[in-house]
Length: 239
Image (cartoon, rainbow, N blue to C red; front, side, top):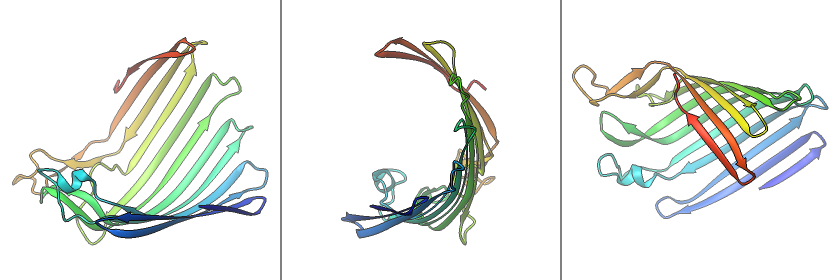
């Protein structure tokens, strides 16, 4: 991995990784990136490109029910383009990122075949937005985010399970006292596609079903009992 700063506001990076796997031979992947500081505005733009390689897991290959020893490794290419801003004396942070990925031989579970398979080509595109704020008192902070994901199994009617198109949430933390802190997380997930039980039937030959959008609230209270001991009380899924 190497980094270069040809100007005060521009940083370039590049890296190479070589994997030697018994079942897949030698695989070489690379990554490139650039970060451009927009003067003294507290903002920066960045762009990244990377290739990837992933061997099938032992579970995917050898599970007694759904394992498939004929699986081949996944390959991927990913582009990212983003903007980060620090405003209000760095108390407010804003970020937006666009990304696009292409996966070859993506490993997935096929409900109709009831085994793990390689999806020949999957395209993924999306955007992530986030904002966080911490006032001068530093006893309170809040962060919000929203994500959009568009997945396409190219030249196929197959869909990938467990990946909502929209996902959003808010997380807030407040210092109740010198030793007590409270964190509240709220998350919203869009409609998702999951496996149905039973997996196949005359009424549902695809073995899939649509799950409704849902909300979730988690709460955690932390207490510093001593300099070396912290206790936490958490309640998940209040809604």
